[in-house]
Length: 323
Image (cartoon, rainbow, N blue to C red; front, side, top):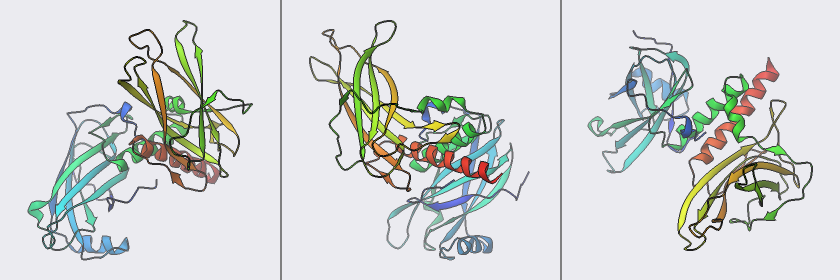
């Protein structure tokens, strides 16, 4: 059954959808699939690109269909093609969030930014992420835009009371700026200091007790960093754990003010072969500021997840204020 009300958001590979990687929640659903076929552009495709402020001539069409028992609420599809004149490989992205998509639904969307000299025979598509109404996910979820979109969905679901698990990434305001040992910053330009103290749980398991202090002049909305563990005796890398943190007070995203501190949480410390605690290195990868800046190397896909969480919580707050 065709449902013409379905509309996809299509944008270039370097564009982020403003609306987490939450790959831990991703599940395999081999029974669900989106079929994508690239087709020559029609008048509606040219008009769609023109309405987006894009070159109306640089368009192709996509015919899509969905087969799956679960209702689909969002997806991300990458479109790779070879420019006939330059021979360069290029990528565009089709993102969709909107009306639920049902089994056997078919629809058409437009991809802008594709040269009219593109040979359709060279077009390759890849479904990177499918988000279902039951809040599960499928796909490799390897694109940054997919991670961003998932984070946004998770945050909006939390604001609706549908995703209490998101509270696992929440930090707590600290009543004091007294900290453990400050970790030398991997990037001194970032306005954030991580502090660490060693403690134990009730079972005498050693723990890293983590905090973060805003060492800059602008309020911080979210952070993402990696803790890497190395064998105490050999120095051999053991594993790494990525941590994302935002602060929500009374249901509202709350900034970390300059000079203030968050309690991030506790992490178990692995034990080396010689019985000593593993050595560790903490690397701050991303810092989200209240002015909209997003700082750091952002090497991890979870940095994009963090950005989605922050924007999703902000969006939910604005919707609540307007209701």
